[in-house]
Structures are given as C-alpha cells and as structure tokens.
Image (cartoon, rainbow, N blue to C red; front, side, top):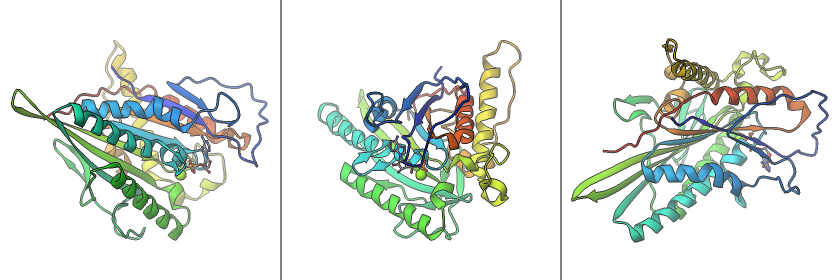
Length: 339
Ligand code: ADP
Ligand code: MG
C-alpha cells in the first residue's frame, strides 16, 4: 500500500537570521529531507533536484492514469511559493511539471497511437471563498464560486474555468495570468497571499484503442500552495500574531483535523485489533472538500513541509515538523481511473 509521502525542505538563511539554539534537538523521520541553508555547500538542494525527486513521479503517475497531489505546507516566508512556483529564472515544481508534461506528450505522440488532452484550472481560496484565477478580472470581493460534488467524479467548483491547453507556451501564459491575478488580489487586500490557498489543477486524459475498443484514463494533478501555517491553530502558536480570531484560517484548521483523523484511521486499520470507525470531516472546509480524493483517497500525494533555519522561528518550525510527522501515518491507495 502506498503511503502519503512527506518531504521537508529547509530554506536558506536571510540576512537578518541567526541560529543559536542550545536545544539538544529532536528527531523526526520523513521520506525526503532537503537542506538548502547554504548555496555554496555541496549539500545545497536545487529546484531541479526537488523536481527530480518529487515532481517526476507526478508525471509518471499521470501517464499511468493515477491522480496525484503535491502540497506545500509551512509558515509564511518558509519557501512554499518558491518550491511550488519559484521564480522565472529559478523555476519551481509547477512550471517544471508543465514543461515535463508537454515534453512527454510530444515524445509519446511520435511513437504511440494515443491522444492526449490537457486542461487547466487555477483557483484561490480566501476566507472560504473560491476565486477563479484564470478569469481576466478577479477581485477578492467577488462573491466566490460554489463547491459541489459529483457522485462519480467527486468534488468540483461550479463555473470554474477549465481551459484546454495545446502546448507548453499556452500553459506558460495561463500560469502568468493566474499568478498576476493572485498578486493583484494580494495587493488589493493586505496580506492575502499568506492567508489564501492556491490550487493549480491539471486534468489529463489519455485515449487510445485497444483491439478496436476505445480506452481512456483520466488523471488529475493538484498542485497546492497553502496559506501560512502560522494561521493553522491559534492554540499551537506562541507568537502574538494570532491573538485575533479573525486570522484563523478555517481551511487550514480543517486540513489539520482531516490529517489527524486519517492518521488515526490508518493506524487503526493496520492494527489487528478493532478497526476504528472514524468520520473524516472533509466537508468542513472548502480546501479539504476539494482535496478529498487526494487526502486519504485515490491519489499519490506528497506533502512538502517547508521550514526556516532561523532560531526565531523555532516554535513554528517544530509545529510544522510535528504536523508533517503526523501526516506520514496516512495510508493512501491509488487506483487507475479508467473508463
Ligand atoms: P512562502 O510562500 O512560504 O511565504 P516564499 O516562497 O515566498 O515563502 O519564500 C520567501 C523568500 O525566501 C523568497 O524570497 C524565496 O525566494 C526565498 N526562498 C525560500 N525558499 C528558498 C530556497 N529553498 N532556496 C532559495 N531561496 C528560497
Ligand atoms: Mg507564498
């Protein structure tokens, strides 16, 4: 059985940071751990390496008909957006996965009798409201789109743009449009990007004939840049930022609850004693509802926990490491989506 994979990535120091902890240290174990504290050192982990380890499996799975999900979790400033999107000259997972997808499509298109269809959606969840990032004009004050659930295909957002993409250059244009919309919203309302979740979704269909019968697999790739985890749970936070209840992010709190419930379920399910019957409250928030199939469901899912190396962030870092460690107990069992 496949588990939910968990990776931890430490970002570099910035000029203001120091590391002076006298703490004896704690040990956690994950599937991958990456140290990017020093660009000069041979241990420095590049964006390319992250893609190689975590992104290339997403592509492989898509061509085999599995759903995948990669999500970045961590406090504001720890490197979530850098890891998922990166910069123009130092690309992160989303642009690399898109590039890899079209490379593979053209490679296979030459040698195999198959056809591919790629569609993209890009949304933002702010204050439990869904905004379409691929519409020309989005403002944070728009009413927001509704989440619904299809009996077979699962949760989806009503009226969300799902755009057909023919090549890598079209894909790049959509990423630029979506990111620009995200930034505009962020400037219009102070601090939105650290409080909002962005979900970039690729729906990928592979169609071919098998003994003259049409066959098709559909894979969804969810690439998620979460809101800053310092808003996850006011009781866990030691800082002053979270004194006001208004800052608590419902979707992040629900994500924690769902991860805990799934971890309990997986541990209970593996034991020979009585199986726990745990209710998983996916529908409590927009984020957990939309990611229902990726969390504890039919998906190869990877959580990338991003942390800061600085001593001032010790509390948040420890909380992120514990959260990531909890997620490691979840057991997912992906199956091929074939029609
Ligand atoms: P977040 O999205 O978690 O709030 P960002 O991704 O915006 O954080 O990262 C904050 C800053 O740190 C950015 O300037 C980013 O380029 C830089 N940064 C984060 N992680 C890394 C890394 N692994 N290597 C190099 N720079 C990084
Ligand atoms: Mg960010």
